[in-house]
Length: 172
Image 1 (cartoon, rainbow, N blue to C red):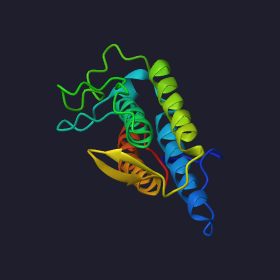
Image 2: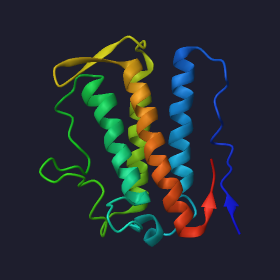
Image 3: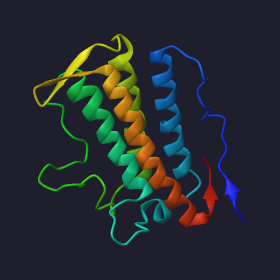
Image 4: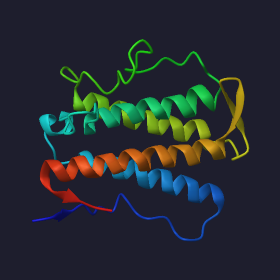
């Protein structure tokens, strides 16, 4: 039996909104989607790497997105290149994804929530044309929002498939 994931924390944005409100609403939609895909599972299910050729797991995706939030809204937007990674080790690609043996879900989830909140705070007083710097190039807040929506949407597709493989739960 297919169980659909529906939750009031995730609502599709209105069809007509100002640019900033639209971008923020879609980003929040995708943040909520990732959260919902992880809820109601045990540690083993969240840490499961269901595709043998991939390092992805639901737990790993939450850690990855915490790193992505920190990168774009702190390092790039605020031009704070000294902001340290949470789990990522530049010497080991995808190190936020694995290993997860000793990873604590509640701690890592709280870190993701904190990074989302910090991202909101870092961008709150900046207009969409405000620019940070990435690799010596200017990057607008508008571009960052669009990229973050794309990043979450792509990984939420992965999360959709993983969740369906775990317990059959599906949702748009």
